[in-house]
Image: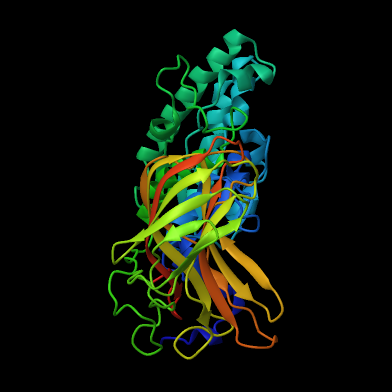
Amino acid sequence: MAKDIASLSTADKSALLAALVGAGMSAASSYTVDFFGDSQAGENSNANQYRAVGRGTQGIALSKGRFRFGRNLGVGGQTTTQVRARLNDVLTSPNGIVSFACGGNDLPLIANGTQSIQITIDNYKAMLDAILATGKRVNVDAIPPRTQAALTSGGLSSAQAVIAAKVREGLNRWLAQYVYAKSPTQVVFTSYDAALIDRTTTNGEPQAGFVRDGIHATPLGATTAGAVWLASMSAFAPPATLGALSQSDIADATYNPGGAMNVNPLLIGTAGTASGGVTGTVPTSFSANRESGTTATAVASTDGSSLTLTLGGATGGAASERLRVQGDTVNAGANTFAPGDVVFMEVFIDQANLVNVQSINLLLRANDGTTQSDILSFLNGGGVTEREAPNASRRLISLPYTIPAYSGSGTQRVTPYVKIDVAADGAGASGTITIRGLAVRKIPAGTTGLA
């Protein structure tokens, strides 16, 4: 006889949850990712989303909410032996997916003869077998490339640094072969070499600008690797839906609760406002201006379904040089949102011939009755003078935000922004950024991904 779940004992409920996770069927936990390993795992952060430069951080932001942050179980500087000693942390987590990254700190030990490569392999096998036995799905990261300078600065001789590069290749080859022998629906292997390595280097070093200390990613490196991470992780993901492509894609509590809540998500018309360093035409219900600084400028143009900013005149003499595009404010209401709802922002970005643009951010700003509070950001340079890729086409998705209880005066609201930071090096900025399909959406009740 079937039982109501509420009538089950605690032990039976735990057994049921384990079975569902094993089958990939639990609700939110099925798509919630724990990051387990060394600093390559530890650099991913939900709480510190403005500064975190882990590839998983950017991969989750790119995933359109299909994945969520779980637990950060990464500890910088640890070897595989030390990570293995913390294995129980990930085995006992309720979350259904593990992104596993470690082994880089073993390289110097193997290269200088302190540790055998077999110890690392044995640790890998023990950890992966134990995690897979729980029914969790696992992404196994290859050890990313590092510079020879980083290896020698850590105490290796030049000859030992060359050995360390060879060891990295060998461990990654072993990991790939070990994973490929497992079930492809439960475990995947992700190598970042094709995206990150400078093929002109003798020892497989990363391209300039992709690492900040010879080992750990810059925002540019993390975003580049994040796209690779997401491609592998998509084997575990629920399907994504398209962004705003139709004027009928408007939020309706009954028929389309996940529709666009803001006015004019397709950026139609020319009745918007350009000011403060921005000239030209702006889509209806939008505004474009220089938010801070004195020299950044842009010419705005519309084609009936997008806004293009042509950058110019920006000397980048101050870190506060920033241009912004603001969408229409969304007020709480029957067809939009209420406290407890989870909302997010999405936009399509085409960038061409960009020079000295530090970052393109998504920002969803909420009011608490007295002040405006910045809630979400796709990527912020965090003071690191990196650059956006010159040419790219992508969909940016903010991290989901739960609307809090509201006790302020006036109407509770959220406002979407796209912010463009100019690099503070005095070199000037140029190129074009085209914005399409800017929408604020709600995750409909009962779903586990963004719809």
